[in-house]
Amino acid sequence: MHPHHRRRNRPRRPHGFDFRHLGLFGNWTGRFFRPGEVRIALLSLLAERPMHGYELMKELGARSGGMYKASAGTIYPTLQQLEDEGLVSSEERDGKRVYQPTPAGRRELESAGADVGRIWQRADEWSDWGAAARPESWEVMRPAMRMMKAAMRAVAHAGSDNERIDQVREILEEATEELEELANER
Image 1 (cartoon, rainbow, N blue to C red):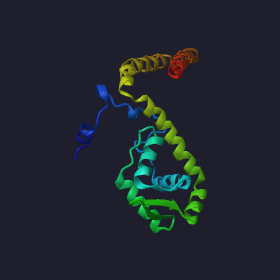
Image 2 (cartoon, helix red, strand yellow):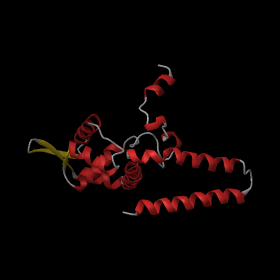
Image 3 (cartoon, rainbow, N blue to C red):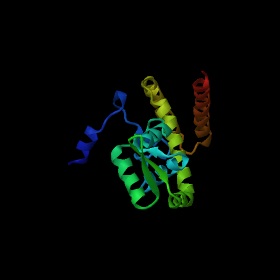
Image 4 (cartoon, rainbow, N blue to C red):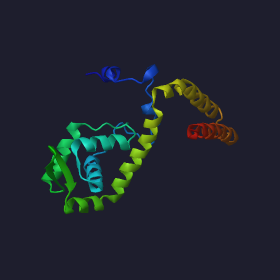
């Protein structure tokens, strides 16, 4: 299949603008989990309390503000792999298979502490975007993008004029502070 055909079939955001490629999600890679991270995330959640697969899917979605939707096709095979490796055990409770880490699983989780921290930090970043990505939020996308374009043009024409670059940065920072104040008003 030609690469342009895949692009046309991709779901689009309202107003036809897909801004994900701009890197506005912090360290956006297009995927929530990097290779090997699903295992660690599941172990981390199970260390908090025993859960069944659907609870794990809901918890991953909640921690990312709804921006990541775990699928059964990801969760259940990973749980089976963890069980095969002796890192989790499971038992039947109320008709559901509930998982919890074994001592080996807790040791694995302990050795992956930095990775666990990065995963949940990323979840917090995504959660911020999830809270902001409500339908009414799209009403301000066009003016926000116009402002970004104007700022970038002003800097592009500045050349090595650091004073102008600082001026543009100051305008954007002031606007951001005012908007954050509005966002924090209840």
